[in-house]
Length: 334
Image 1 (cartoon, one colour):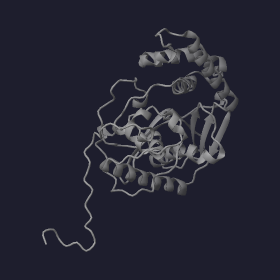
Image 2 (cartoon, rainbow, N blue to C red):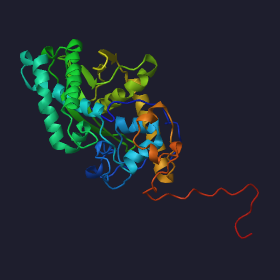
Image 3 (tube, rainbow, N blue to C red):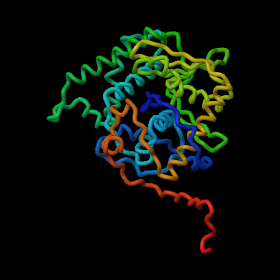
Image 4 (spheres, rainbow, N blue to C red):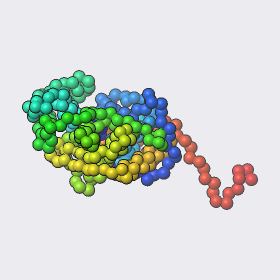
């Protein structure tokens, strides 16, 4: 579950040219674009600014959607307000993961519903600021808002049972952290919701989405995250996943795709070009906004030039752009 973003769309910007991909940082420093930061408490300072060291599906999608958004999240590491929808997605993912801890016969809708309050309480204990989601302007807790939120989480969990039968599934991996380094030095990483392995060795990658399935014209964008994971799994295990499966709990749809080796090679080329574009923007400080309909959900409108804002000072050194002599000009001092 690569939330942010986990759940998220976009359009390519990878054709931009740029310098060679920077070498990876030492292993202990290979942190991705800090997926925790978008959920940080509003008003709190995020971690110190730093250069990108790896790429996850969510952060790649951020850059393709809007380079300035990528900068705010990865370079500046600005905090973002938690949202009820994203928080609900985290809790639902936790329930679907934990349900496989019990014997197959006990994986029932009632058992799954019973897990919800406990998973919410565990998340709240780890992130107390989430209590603000259910607090009114007067600072008083509003239990009816929490009850409605949990009821919607229950509906999402129940719908899963109409799409898959957990009594017949024994996942090989759940919430699997994966990481690989391409020959170019680019580090790819992320968290896969579920990996199923058939007795014949065929691999299926499954991702849960708590939103609705995209319209057909947006499905390639939705599959980007899955082909990213397929590339990483292929490099780690030496096998192309037989199937990629997106389970949309919001609409009750299942989207599947069977990738090929050639397609994964194309994904690798796209990611290399994307990383070069990110490297170029990092060195020049040129992070241009790309307005879309999704801007209405962005926490950073006040800092965005498209909305009359001014980004904070760029926290990294900027390389000077080499001066190109005018045509016909002689050497300096002549």
